[in-house]
Image 1 (cartoon, helix red, strand yellow):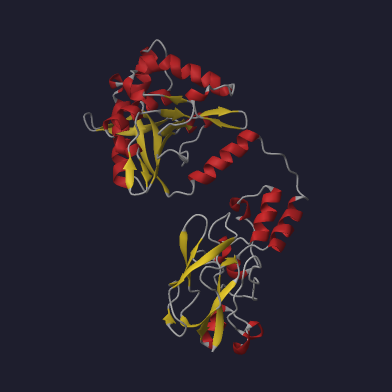
Image 2: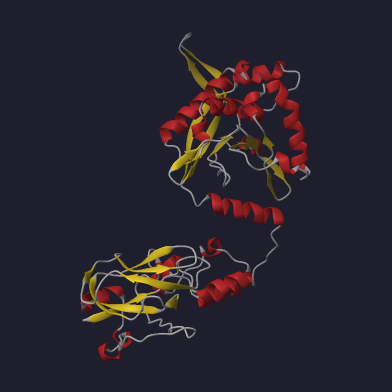
Length: 397
């Protein structure tokens, strides 16, 4: 038989150790892979340490009430030699059965952290794939360099389960120093942080072409000449006013509806994007929104938005068509469930059944990106359809 170590996992980014609360199996019990073996408590929660593989629980070294650092060997599981080969455990790294003794570790002296040589993908922490595991040393070095988890995505890992080691990181950083670099502005760093938090959710996108002829005709006669993005913002506000659950946020086991229909819109600023917000956009007609919209656009371009005119929106409108783009999949901000985008308008043939002929129309592709935990494709499609109906009948705005 071979022995597979049960390691104290990394249970959170700031967690360096955990206290043993309860051992759930007895020595000699059969255990299955990913079964909770030990309950441990951190300063945040009680969590489980899982079995790295199936086998028989050989020995438990950890004692209830004692604290152990991340990476400490809490016990061993007896597994077959075939499983040991599959998991990449070397014979030289196997502890001798007689030397595995249960010893009490009294504070303040911590238990010895044992890191056996592991190859071929033995999971390092419980519940986490090897590639996402970060040792305390790695975290300290990343903090020193100002790096995040996302910065490691392009580094091939040579450690257990493909995890990035400190040596991998140092080689990567040495290579970067040979390239041309420019410092990231505060705006760029803020955008990067927001996008990292946004992408932690499952984001999906639906698409729909919308004919803009009626909108453009309405705008040509309007004395204030509102832009297409403001038409879209007003249409989205009306649609969400009719069904605010579409912009709700999933908090625990509840969908929390927004208290007001506050819609943001993207404005390109120096080295980033500003998102001013029109509050209660469903309660004001298009004519009343034009001067407020124009004022916020100008302040955003100057990066002088007052605190009350930014943040706290439930959705965003972005007009990527201004860059000549026909289609894009933008990402909602972390506090939002929805983002609607519009592409450039193009003249395309449209079959008119009344006269049985193709006629030219101006059409743009609209996208609705959404938090898939809150909305499914059908609900997102119906919301975008309602926005299309309002844009194709702009007198309703």
